[in-house]
Length: 117
View (cartoon, rainbow, N blue to C red):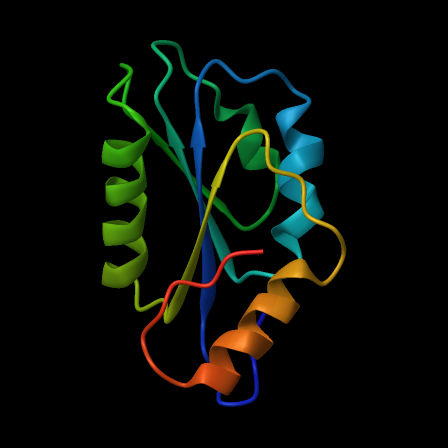
């Protein structure tokens, strides 16, 4: 989702032994971001999440903890030129326009901040 000044918005979601229900959760915000980085802390592959078009799946093949996984995703997003990063765990479900509302607040504040619903 590009906002007025063409910012690129990404989501980083950490997975751990997800079920296919996670697809419903991710789809609740997928249309509001340009790219989703799924960082998987599971020992087994869960590449089924790649059925959502704008996902980059990164398997760590072990439980490194949520903070480490978020750092991997954020670093990847920054290296890819993303301007805004929204972080989630696999259980997060967003109401429609949640990210848009966060971006509106971020734009109004107009300085580096953390914005949360």
